[in-house]
Image 1 (cartoon, helix red, strand yellow):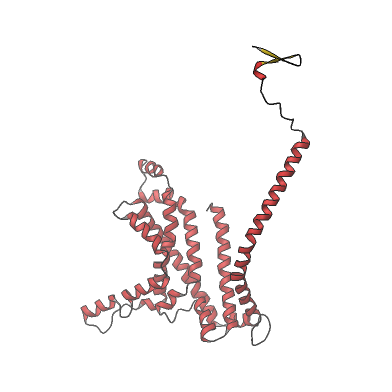
Image 2 (cartoon, helix red, strand yellow):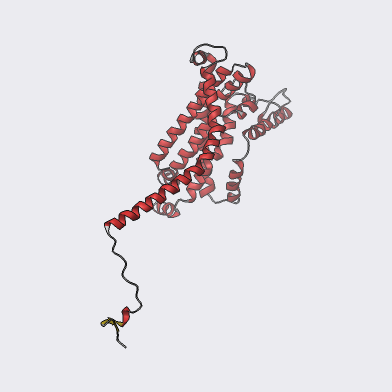
Length: 316
């Protein structure tokens, strides 16, 4: 049957059983739907804020409240005086200026050394095939979990006053003592920091190199480019964000490093963390210790903010 009759009106067979046309989407209907969606979004956001609030409160109590106490102690010393008297006294002291200078040059020197050494080692692991390359890359991940004093202790076994190197020297030459005494100097601290923090640069570099298209290297090599030029013009631009991330992390960590300086036994090397320890524990001058701590925190936060700005511009 081609047609059926509904109340006397002919209806095509293909229209039988079809749903009625939906109501037209008028502006009023669209506005109402938008209001409902907005209300649902606000309700979901309020629920999310309720879930986020407890962790934020816990973090504030655990981290921000102790920092606030440090700042308060630096502004209100126990022995009385003005709010900034402790700051004036600390800034005028020779020990603080020397500690600040030592901290900065050690952190900058260690960062530069880690960037150069980490870039070279990451290049070898990523692009020079040799047996055990994957094992070395995995060991780097494990090395990141080692405490800093463990590496320093290993260096003491090798280059310490009674270490293996001095023992071998005295055994061969019959001398009373060996020639290796640099570990208790600033250069020994620098060596220990470079040794420990280099993997923190290598890890992001290896991740960046794993995403690099090998076709670019093959094309550059096919055009006659030498390895040094390939590294400079192809690999290095891709590695800049990883270098910025790793270098900034190392710089901040070196500024706050305490264990390496302590375990090397470098008595003439006083950094800001060591000065804080001396003022608080050895001298019981808590106001001065809090002042130095505030300065150390301000430098670290400032460097982190600078890293965020540079990272955004570099696309990191």
